[in-house]
Length: 154
Image 1 (cartoon, one colour):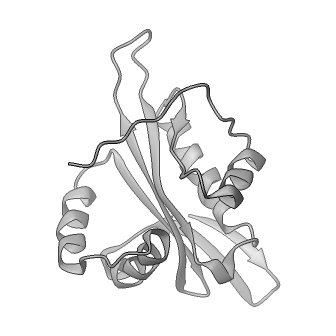
Image 2: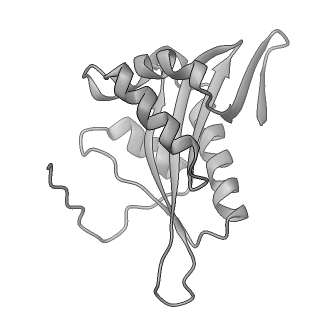
């Protein structure tokens, strides 16, 4: 668990998300996607994810309120030294809490976990229109790689 001091009375905590956080997580994801989330399915999926050590969902709480989250997924590889890598997904900080370092602290924590798990690299995709998010990722040392992302909805 990481702590960020914001004045003396305000505290941000970064920790693994718990099932009791899912109603608030639903609100975060709805801001992220501009779509409604199916809470019942979310609970079912969370219970499966919780049993798999290769899924890490972090929560950022501000004075006890969930204000940010991200998910890291450890993927095993068979090339070169067969080191795993981490895919980062669903990075969100509530709009009114952006600019306070919350996203940065969540990324530092997930990268720390990736290093502990011997990941070779982390990777993620970000929508082309999310220019502010791209600036944020670049400020953390991420570079746009010379690859083309592909997605097919099933």
